[in-house]
Image (cartoon, rainbow, N blue to C red; front, side):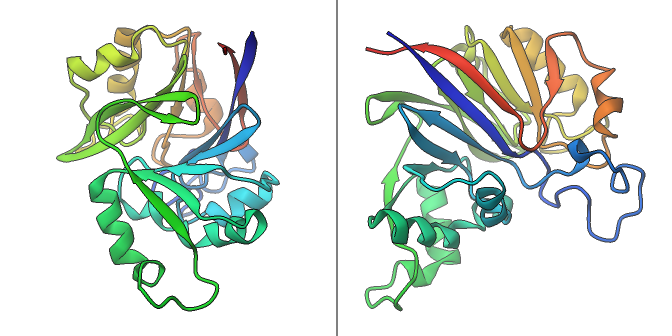
Length: 262
């Protein structure tokens, strides 16, 4: 039978977000809502359950803005602060759903969570702290219920980062290089989301030229750019530079894909 995979872009900005604090550039001063970018994160919905990829510093705001009242699990791409800093706020869902929050992450992310949120993992917890259950993942498929998730390992300078393929949808953030072995996992997907920081070269992120070359190599039906910085330009300025099947993602954008379920 046919089902739907629903994606909501919770945040499409870089580690500083857009606007950047105290910046007076024409992007940060834009009055277009598409130029207001929280830290990068998405929510995907499968079988009436919500899953989050990354809980950055804006996680609380993203949950409130999108009126999210239930989260089944959280997947982490990597351990940088702009992707994990909001984990403390999962306690709201602990209270509502009366269970631990399922967290799927690499050993490196687990180590960072123990360091940053030490109070969550102590033996004698302070009342009201978040309650999580860590599920370690490696670079091989795993399941969320009956839903197969395929990790895609990319390199963020020298740091391994997980992208995730869910059915015909692939989400990648903070990539600079992607091996041929990992590209094979992505080929055939209908929708690809990938980071494109700016036009200029960057040590740890795709720039526009590199992101477009990656998209061309993978060959999805549609692609969306995320992790966009204020140095790139305004939303409307970027879109005119793109092929007809490539779009700039923005906060609050929703997309749907048909999926085959059994």
